[in-house]
Length: 211
Image (cartoon, rainbow, N blue to C red):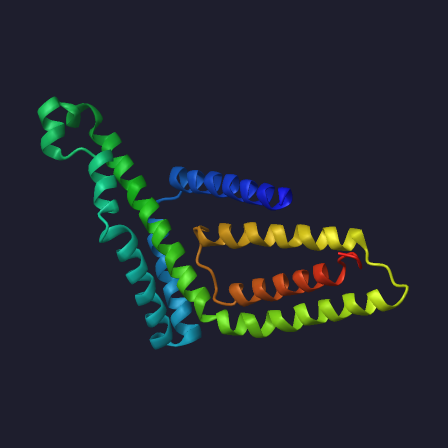
């Protein structure tokens, strides 16, 4: 439990720093081009119909979560003064360029968030195949553990710990990839599933025999 809590704390910290770096240094146009190139890669890999369905699903999720609920308009309304309000108090002359920069940062944030929804939707296309890949690794690990329980073979605490670390690192990688500001090729997700499944299988196989 302590290890799990630590993993989530580290993951949250890394993601927060990652997002702050994106908001500070990644331009809106760069992100827009990244999203477009990723959409094209998905269409070329899955066919336009399948990729289009995944994108439509991501748009529905995004719209339901932030547009229909009024969160996006609330954020812009709270953080960006209207031109009338700025002119009324004379802020537009003094801070106009700052407001423009901050509005661009907010649009960057929403683009990053939409891209993460799109990647989750595309990852969902791989979910049935992920089960097909993961289950054999887990069964193999369980069988090897059972074999060790019947003979004098010893489970390796070192291998178990290394496998656990690998799984924790992969959890962080999954989350960071959602917000990575470069176009991801579709094969990234099945590759991560394959590595994760192998690490999980090894971790199960190296459980202590009395565990």
